Image (cartoon, rainbow, N blue to C red; front, side, top):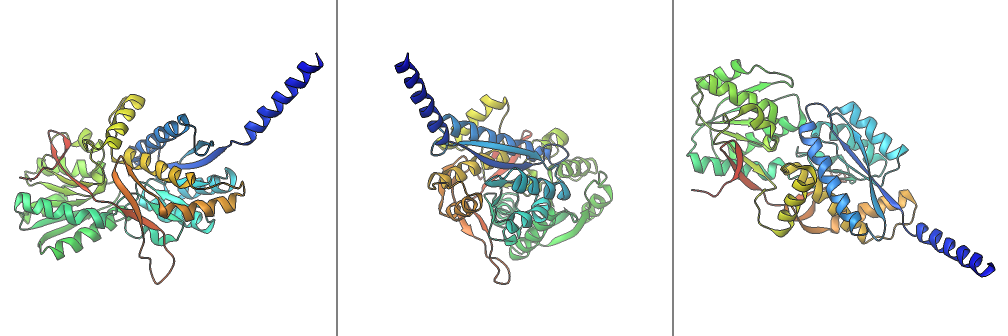
Length: 384
């Protein structure tokens, strides 16, 4: 009996020792899970969950499980700030992914940067995001990298000579997209017949579209989020405007077709991800996502999936000390060295240029794909 008791004590001690050698790594996820931006935030969340499940099923990172701490920032700047504070100071996460919109990152990013905690954007494409500071990263390809190729492709395909422009002027993402569109059109010497604006929440665009129609453009360039873009397309067709649209990253949502149906036929859109990219990493991701969530993935799910795998690759090179401040810094220093072949293709970071000599974060170094809308869905453009 004494021998048995000693054996049980030794066994219990071994179990405690084993439990002590592995721990959960808390990963913050701040996404818009309700409200208008949920069309982007929910796929983001799903991409993170799929990646975490796969990583944990393989034993985690150096034996440690990834624990996602998910919060709904509702696509609102004030809520994003509150969620960031909770994740950093209360939940004590190692890194935060999100928030969903560029507006929200401009508001909440400084909180993470001041706390020396990485904020990693997977759907923030506005220029200036990584100028917030050295703890701001993103794998979402900037509009300034995507739009020049998108415009050039559409111009060649449709033999465009002049365009009209419409954009939301009260949102960081759509305003930044407009600034890039304006610069690209000037560089490619494409005249603009008229430039029209709207504000978030507008649903009637007939006044702007009537002016656009009067200029007789060959295409309409639209820096808009998907819901507004879809309504603009529908109303444009109703007014007899038959020319194609050219859109930015905000078009990359199923909402575009749920609302516009076939009104967006012929639209050109740039994206860092192609669903039919035959690369093994992408084909695995698409199949796994369909199996887990019962639906097709989109660009935002793919970028989130890759982002967590990027962070895991960085963590794999580290021996976490248990000192949160030191571990946050170690992860921040390891991230720029990571390169992977993910669902979105070959990826690595590049240092952001920064402003006025101030330290900046890291942007995505990645080539975009170009889509054309055919049959109410995005189709990888093959040229003509």
